[in-house]
Image 1 (spheres, helix red, strand yellow):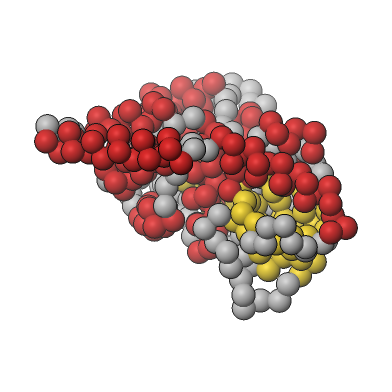
Image 2: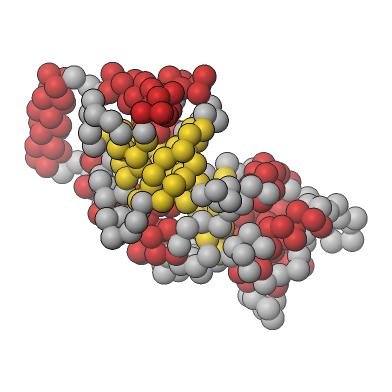
Length: 337
């Protein structure tokens, strides 16, 4: 994304249509470090497009019409008056195109991949070996792209992630305090919490709306952080999706919508693996957070979480406030409840 460093926070207006059945609407368009954000005139984000996956439907024509890679039904139209924004997007697209393998190389890779598959089949190469190699070579930026893509698929069921100009700094500070890259609040679709590739922790809005103590939501974030430390979210995706997913990611650097949709449908209903209590307590202690609010939120009787309650690392100690009261009130209203 270095091709657009000089354009960070560049803004323009355009016409956005989420699908052919809806009317185009005027929106704000802005470029960040990794995404193009489309917002309404109340500063509420409507959608995010990965900067590395933007396609143009009408090359060399005006107005410029763009869409996310693989989803031509969602479009953004920029008039010739927004020349600076168009040039910024085109510069990025050219940079991405230069980074792609040339056709000759692609043919070579295709042949090599075929040979590898034949050798693997002949020697009964274990799928786990391919998955481990894939995990070792996938860069962080690609993990983040996969996480953002999966979040987008979840939003189609749950509704757009809750956000506002006032709450985004609150979520960023909370994520930084708890040691994760990003925290996202969804209005539905997730029972409590999920950890997506790219270090994205997803929380159901009930965790901020239904509790007076922010330590409950923070506890779920720490639980997901602990879970990710013991099972890489991308590894969980590849294990669940099978060897085809590993092979596709290894050879193309991407995962298909079908793979993401299938995994997304399973992950929201799958039972969570038990967490090692010692590791969870260690993360709570490092964050200087009591385990009791989280433990009673998981089990109101405390019977199944008695170990966390009795071993509370902050028992008998003075506790510092996780966030200002004003910030917590803002966060509780993030979904407009």
